[in-house]
Image 1 (tube, rainbow, N blue to C red):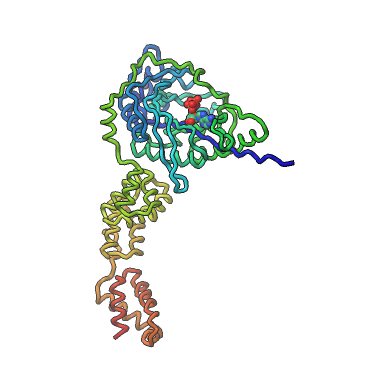
Image 2 (image 1 turned 90 degrees about the vertical axis):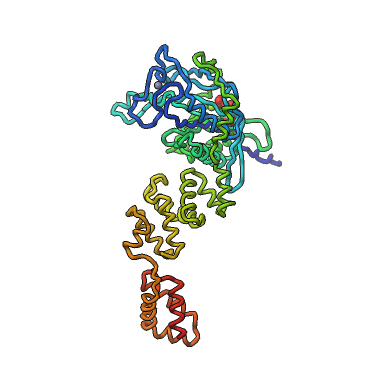
Length: 485
Ligand code: ADP
Ligand code: MG
Ligand code: ZN
């Protein structure tokens, strides 16, 4: 009896990403939006939901939100509306979250990314603005076995929620998309993209469908994904789990599942809520959000150069190979640093080599961010210039670089203090050459008998004697003179 070929399933993934906007104050009140303050110090009647307090929209948040929407190619809506999303949770003091529902401020758009160097893209459904909830603190207190504590500093902090189409088809694509999205957010300066601190959060929706089918399968929504890696891992686990269920003839239950990073598995948390569960209704305390076309155009004019354009420029104008340009443009501070070094030394390739090589290694060893680099861009540029003008050799430059990291000094000062400059004084070097030749009579004999290959040995000896500081050009010239005499 012929057995039917096994059904192949295609994963379908849609992501909902919350990005915390880097405004000074919250979305509807004047409280500071900063992370890390002592609990419940950034609160007021508005964000605590006390009776009678009224929200006032933060215009700076609108500015950042529109900037993001334009960078993602969305259509910014002239009129959009805030709505109340009602649910009960202890960290939600008002009993509802002010969000945007059926009329978000931005629709459409798309994000380009790459997987293994192959260009891919995913369309966006929408971007909307909403306020964040507070934070429940479940552990870390002596009585955490009995009590949950609440910190409302985060309540009311502005968020943009970026929602993709169900248009990603592999966990790796979800990961690559998130890397690009973070890069975009940080380039724009609208979000710091820090997943550990929760300023960027991602829920992942995933379903399977038979290969070739056009209809969507039943999805689960994965939460508690606190790193890009975990998004990828949770999706991998969930694909396998759903596939097993489908192959066993079971149905996938539409539900919200929590990822347990330690165990690497997802657990059911609750049935997936539907939008009617939230009793959405228009927020009566706020006017419609009106963003006139002229304002959209003014914000568009202020868009910075985005990663893709910058990468192209690094390749075309500075001659960097594509993987290097990619690496240097992923995060804006890296790209800015590179440009400063390249400009300061006039040699983009040398700048790129130092940054992707020695500097990256040092930063990694010391667990430092480029913003806290022990070597400022101007100093690295100065070091590269010292190499270019022949003051130090490549080998010595590495030594100078190490000293720059350790002592925080100018490269020229280190070279002077330690006497590391190339020896280009003829008399000084001639004395070294004579000493080397006098100490290697056998090799001199060989050379003069026609085995000119032995010349490299003499160069090596001169370098060794001078600790790598001999000018290679001069050493060559003097050796030839002495040997051919
Ligand atoms: P909700 O707000 O209830 O989570 P949405 O319709 O706003 O639902 O969709 C949320 C996300 O889920 C979107 O990113 C969307 O692409 C994705 N999504 C919707 N249906 C599916 C499905 N069947 N499989 C995978 N992803 C889906
Ligand atoms: Mg959702
Ligand atoms: Zn407040």
